[in-house]
Length: 258
Image 1 (cartoon, rainbow, N blue to C red):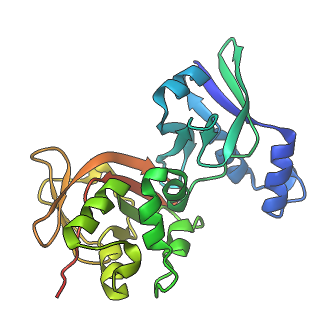
Image 2: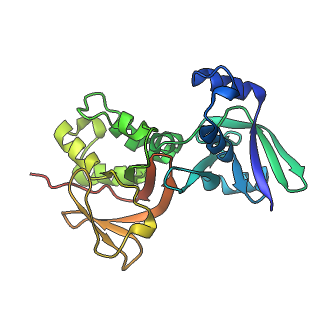
Image 3: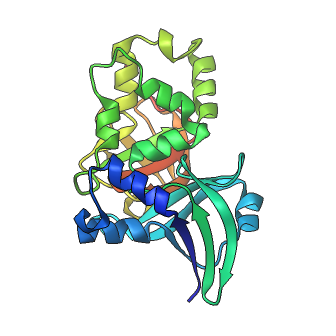
């Protein structure tokens, strides 16, 4: 079959080994190395023109997490071609008999939920909410953990969803939301100890978030209904990280509030 290989340079591998405390490739556990290598392989031939025409989005690599779910890969062509927010193409479209190679300047490590949240500019307001300095919960550590089987599900509102939320609640920014309300709201977008993919969703299903439960509706596409009857459409599903999965929603869902 045909494949697309994102090929890191020797220098990219040197940087990867140094950053992860390995003296050489021989020190990298074979299972980990295999998964990382497969995270640079996409089924089918994808040219730089294909990526530029698509502008930005997600594709799937041949790597899997410990649950066997294929990992997603985010690409953005607004300034060259970049993968997962940091690995850039330095030489494109080397065509072989069974596919195509793009040389990249960084090894693309196993993505976490945090990787996809920070690499996609559509989630910049969500990232600001998760990283506010006064949090009592270390959301960054939870979403960045890469040591266990995938156990985090995030329903991620876009920037536009937050803009509508600010207008609806007459707020200026994330910074003016009282901490207990902000954390209760963020918790209602998070599920711990479960990698809930779209195929797991059923109509009228109750999802036990860290905050207030949400109800699934499949009657008019996949939707989430919060405890106040507000409806969020799930507009993109199954952005699969090594430690969990993201579903993109078009409205901020709310917890039970006084």
